[in-house]
Image 1 (tube, rainbow, N blue to C red):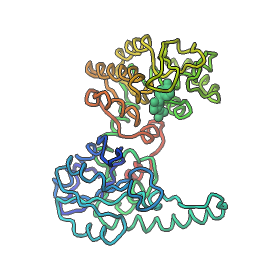
Image 2: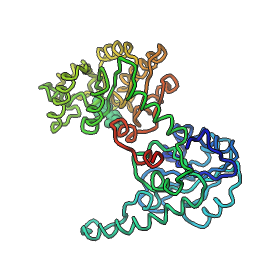
Image 3: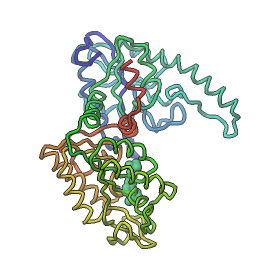
Image 4: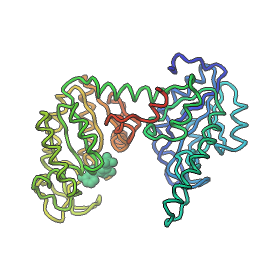
Length: 418
Ligand code: AMP
């Protein structure tokens, strides 16, 4: 079933969106990328004569009614972007939610409360004593799994059609992302966010124009091994940036001072280098690093070779030589994938490397390359530099994007396709 061909006339659509947006201490939305991304799907249903029930999680509440995590905080941001009033149910399961859904008229929109106020959403028991026995844990798990069925059934009862548009949580087998789909065997589909994400990632992973470069940054090798190995089968070159650099340098006998480094990953790093050589994949590291004498915006800085950093100093960004060599390489590529900043971009002093990468990706895109940016931090990065509309595709998924690229079946995707 496709959203473009479905007849929504008079139907109530329950849409799993990803409104897990950052809020400031006044509970205002500080980055509404995910809200904006969901608007075309919502509008489509409304324009075709349907009504919409929005459901999402926000943050990681540990109990019901932890109002810090209430979706009420984002109602006005959604209304602003959508240009339609959004009624807030204040709950997911109560009578008010059911009543509101029943009375929904074509063209109207309502929003349920944070799904994760309920342990049933994730199907994981809560509030277990720290010294709970395995038996108690198993019992609690059984109980939450049993009540999860009622939770899913109730959510499904609000609507005639289910749309999953939350790519960011598609790698979770949760009530709203996967289990609910079974109640809509002939009336389930992806929204435009999901369709766009799958098309973009499939395009890059299955049929990339060459040369294909992946720029992988971030802090640790340990969280990126699987994706590095998978990419090795697809790309022509791999640019490694960020904190990961120093594990690779140290594994080869380099001096990395106080830089972030994972000695237990040395064998893995060496293995990755060996595999790259065997496959003919060019590995490109930052030749120099912008080093600091403290993890702080006020730190003193100096540039050092990435494999010769004195004690008391840590590499927090790439240096000028690296910026130039990354640039020259990226400009020669036709497909570019970027995941993970190449420095501690949250501090302006160490953001110039990531900014340079973002700018050259935009430049290469303008010259005809296809560029896909993904992973929470790279998205924050491209937004920080105001370049999101200068690249081909910005993915809304972090873990989901990596798992999908790693070739894993995402429960949220499988539930619609099966
Ligand atoms: P990840 O979630 O693994 O993609 O990591 C993103 C984080 O890596 C960001 O918060 C960056 O600040 C951090 N990061 C990037 N480069 C470095 C570095 N050289 N040292 C420490 N952290 C870094």
